[in-house]
Length: 110
Image (cartoon, rainbow, N blue to C red; front, top):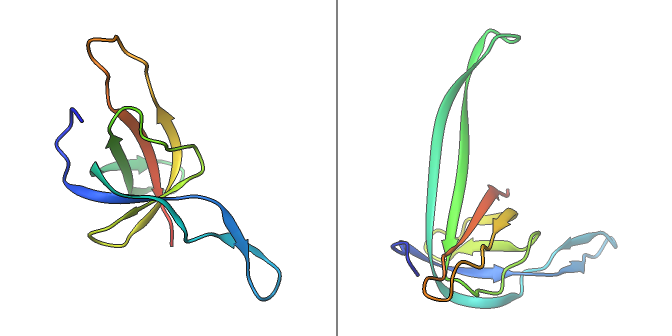
């Protein structure tokens, strides 16, 4: 990993059915203990139509090249137990001499 890991994460994948028959996100981890760099950034923006300022939060994650993660997977921060959904990922192949980290855009789930 090129970025400095500040936590460890689990990758959650799949879904299950609850008692009412609704499809819900599965809680089974396909990988655990993966070193990761999670960074939350905030920025303020002005919305003229509303006449108000808003705070926009974005979360990015970096994982070691080759980590098995897919768009739609969920990532759980093992230190805080916060769960994020993978919105976008950029897995550039790079060169054989330098394999870049996977850069992921996350959204926090509730």
